[in-house]
Image (cartoon, rainbow over all chains, first blue to last red; front, side, top):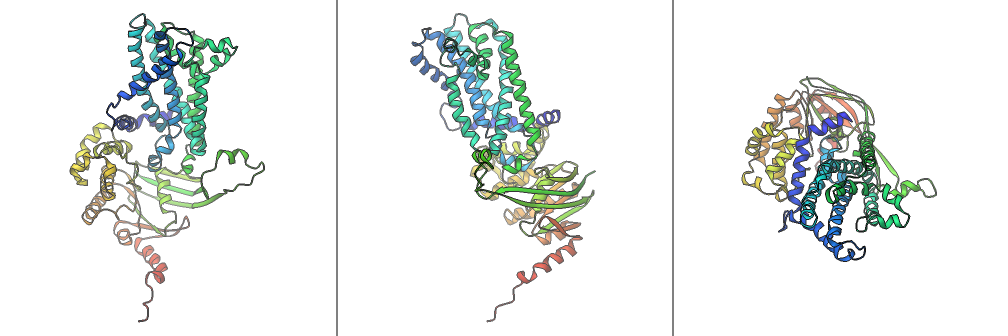
Length: 260
Length: 255
């Protein structure tokens, strides 16, 4: 594992320049360019605001902030998994060319998605300043570690998914469908109290996406810090995801090239 | 000090006749379905043993499908052997599949960066080489357009220029000299000579028997993943040519 990290560091210029290129080419022919990254979550939030905010009684100002925060985290983790699972297939040319550490390819995806995630969070900070009761929540300092935890968690699941997809191409479709189902299981467009009232509170508590939503959203939007056992749960998820990622690399790195 | 030592190397590809195995087939395997898509094992390298020391230039010849390219990729570390030990000391530069792995949307300059970093360069070391690469490939203003608009020949020029800008100890070459226009081939050959002088070990796969004789100090003839003959380039090439002579020199048709 240590060797692998060293190799990833050695080739940092390679994957960092690819991340930069992905960013530039993604919007190369569009008029708004990276503006789409800002606009998409805002538009989504707007739509959900119009449709749902009357249903659950809270004010639309509050609902908009809560939903944008939850969407930002959700979209980041979902996109990391959905695009990350194809990362070996898409980088096949490099894999066949040179024995680079496999962790690089999911990292390329995670870093690309992280940039969009951070842009969305900047929009969120601006939205809080406009709609919220204070300009900046004083608890904002605890958000960056939470973001880092979400990124590492994303890298782990993307790595495992990338190996699985290389062996079984069906996995990428399974992930897409499951993600769709998971979106409705996660309290994103509705408040978690809805599930608690149904006696399904445990679903909220074990939900691996919701815990990352909590540790990003609460300090940023509500100005409260979630209890430490939520952080412990997120940390545990992150550690096991990264562990699984390295485990998969160690187990399959010499064999996966024969499956491409 | 560069060194290559291979002992009883086996590389087997398990391929499927049609597509990949599906998740369904994997899960239901042996339950009640017999596989409609059985695994075909291809033994690409068969108990290959080889020792190369500093200063040797090895030429590898043989029919298509004899395992030559697989051997190079195994030497480069892309394919891990199924069994056997592989020791390669010294930093490796591989010149195979050089025209794949370009980022089509990015322009030539950016691709010089990606390839350079891929070969372990840093922004500082690459800065000096960028102009040198651009001069060598003679692409001029074409370097400013995305490489997906390049012709195959232009791509090879760029790839060759980047790949040969490093100073490797172990050089692995696969049929790169048979591409590009005539002027570029001359230039590339000169560059290859320079590189071979600098690198301490070379393995070169080629169907161009004349250049094997010209460049190499030792030659192996591979067949079905095994070394069929090992010796000086002159004798191995002569034996190889003799083995295919009946096909290569057909008896003239009666007029």
